[in-house]
Length: 316
Image (cartoon, rainbow, N blue to C red; front, side):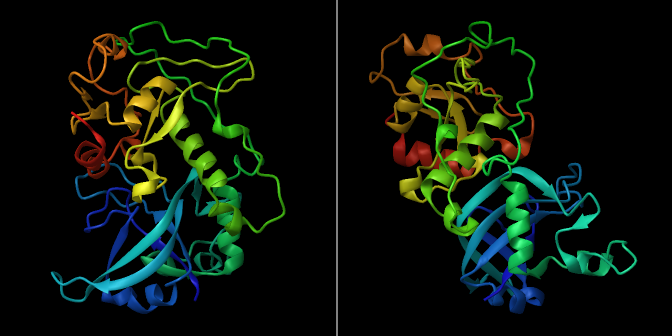
């Protein structure tokens, strides 16, 4: 077994869903098969998307375990790599930072970028290179740097003015989990405490610590936010720890969402189960009736996860 880098757009042209499967041509079959049973890194290239959107970040953005490879019966000489334990980094990691190339094969002897190697959509990776990318991607979780909290403009449709309200106690917060131990990073990464904290950090940052349904933003006296990171497709039902499978919700709204009393339509409208919740619940929702979304489309809920919640969780 050997680790690998798989190149993909977050919304790829191929029949991919990076959280679950990776579609690739036979050209890379040997490299992918070598990584079965081991870990991979997803890399987003600069090339434009099929829809003509701006190019990618040239960054590593997630890791996952490669479970198996299956042939694509509908496309000659194409295959699927099925993955598990998907987890996004808390910050994208550029392929080169401060003159250091995380993949040694991408750097020529003269210090320039090896464009030939860069052009390969699948590249095998050493254990040491993999660990360095993980340490950079999870630097906040590992205590290496603070979490960046950009301040957005206050949405006009918010039901109350959004601000930072001091509250010194009683706020549940994933970031308080103690992760200081001497286990290898991979062992930490598969444990729920680490994954919960990484998922929570990514979702809260994407939504600016603001509840997507109510517009409430409450920060306690310790600088921690009241908002919680909710999985759209639950982890118990094989939901991935992906920003696109997450939404930031206040505690009460999160409770109702997990129990199927509220849900989200494909146009991001909030759905409320009729005759199952008090009429006053609708007063909490922003006047537009639609989610307050992250600015970056790559961080917005994916239709596949929303569809699952409506079919399997929602009681409406």
